[in-house]
Length: 126
Image (cartoon, rainbow, N blue to C red; front, side, top):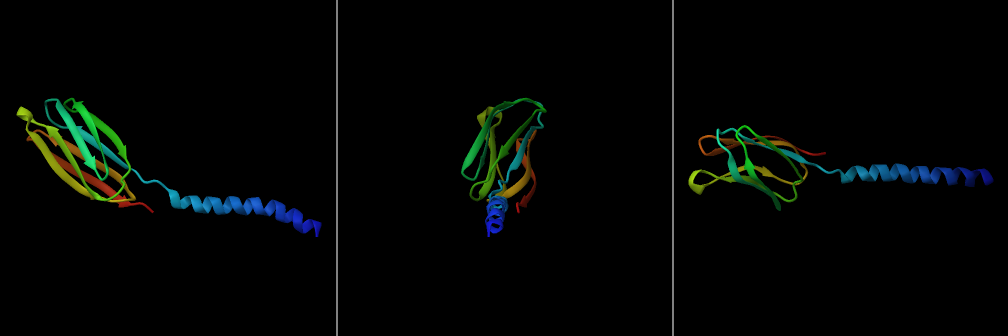
């Protein structure tokens, strides 16, 4: 009988640890890495990227410069990029649809002809 209680005392914490590890697997966080690239020959200013329930901004991006940002998608909706173009005209474009648990990469290229091109490699996290 004493042996049973001794085994139970050592087995119970081990089982709790195993169940906790299995349970934590469900709470994995998924991220999208965003890269903004200025492919023009002039600095671009007032860049804003909006995505579901959040946004980030870049004051200025030099010609050829790259800006990296990591975001967590919360909700669903399109990602949108905009910046101040020539004569303060706002250049704006919608990108791909985002939703919870997406992971991967998005590149936002700011091009010389006042356009924005999105390329993405996204998948649903498991």
